[in-house]
Length: 203
Image 1: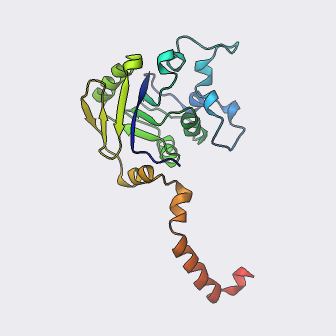
Image 2 (image 1 turned 135 degrees about the vertical axis):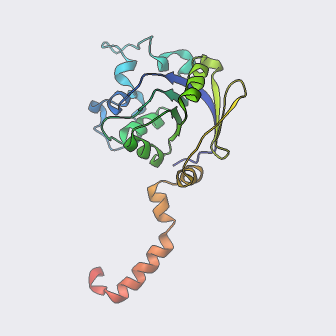
Image 3 (image 1 turned 90 degrees about the vertical axis):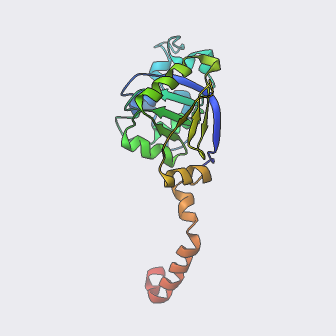
């Protein structure tokens, strides 16, 4: 998993509330267990018309947001089923940070485990960033994870909170496997002792 330090990128506005995981990545695209390749189907049913052409009224289809790395979203983002494919699709499409007032718990946990930074802010702060995002190409927002600050296009700073453990995992690029591997010496030592005391388990 990539390390997250400081991101300065285009922010796209998605103000709808209760955007569920089936909107993020429809169920019919969940036939893979790979983390890559899902980005092309991100928000598929909002992004495309029935004939496969792009919908002009969807924010991420607008030229200003084609390379967006930040989403500013409505409340309860990521609700619905617990599919881990949702953060996979977001990160595969280049999204590195999602900012909103609230997120579904399982989606929240899955996102951090896959290197996607989710930031919870007060409604008034989200409203400010939503207006910034609607500025299109000028809507470059800087997210400084180390300092726990968001810098708006006008230079104003918004502070945010994050659990220390989640911050450590993101800044060091540690997913669950990497966290386990950091304990490899202790695991090897335990297995060595266990082989001596219970050799029948290893035959």
